[in-house]
Length: 175
Image 1 (tube, rainbow, N blue to C red):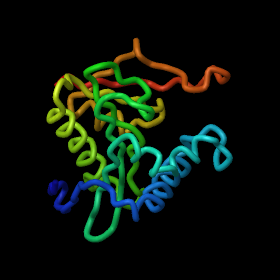
Image 2 (image 1 turned 180 degrees about the vertical axis):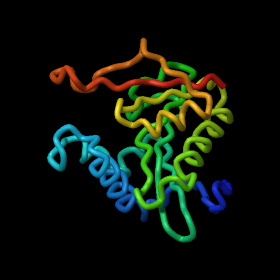
Image 3 (image 1 turned 90 degrees about the horizontal axis):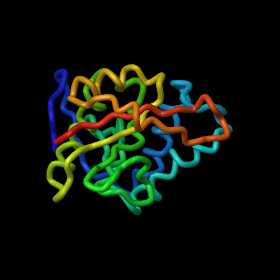
């Protein structure tokens, strides 16, 4: 898939296994630089973010490419499985969306989300797409809402019950 957004030609394609390390570092760096990890560089979730191969073993990892450079990535979970957090039967899930800081605002994040939505529409029995987000991800929230996702506060959840202040907010797009 290729799309032109903001005058830039961004291609979305399945990530090549040779790119997994780069995508893992890109994702971890995006979360760290944006202050989205509670424990900084010692946060155990950092290892999860870096482990693209584990996600790719049970889901589809997509890469956003600008020119010849990988500038972003996302995990598309078509129907549950070990990397799904909140998907119910008939729902696809978007996980670990990240774009290099210097490539933001060029449409890579939107192209990645649209590619996931297109895949969900092509998945038999899939009626919606869901995702979790941190409260501080305001730019991402604006993107999701612009693409038709709506907040589902009844599905908000805490991945770390031992920490009361770590609630992820959720969104859903009905297809």
